[in-house]
Length: 131
Image (cartoon, rainbow, N blue to C red; front, side, top):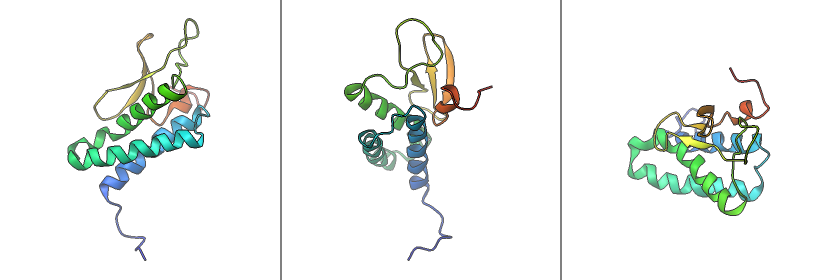
């Protein structure tokens, strides 16, 4: 039986955190259906291998999982997440920035603004007010 006081492996912590952040964003937009959650799991499996090869990239995993899921959704469901900032014109998706870096966030390139950190999209799309 595992000792509950045993520290969690840093790789596992990184992967669990990335999964939780992306699932929070999906749930905030009511997009977290079973097939979409499977997309998150597939990305986490792929990123596990990636970060095992390049441990210094652990800080980038959440943004990469968000991008992986966004790409997979585009192929099967359409653009996600839609921009909550631009009220007119064609609906468009937010992008993750930096593409490969720590502290990933969703941005609207059309308006040139940071909308929310990955994992906090709900606050920008009708959850708690952002400041």
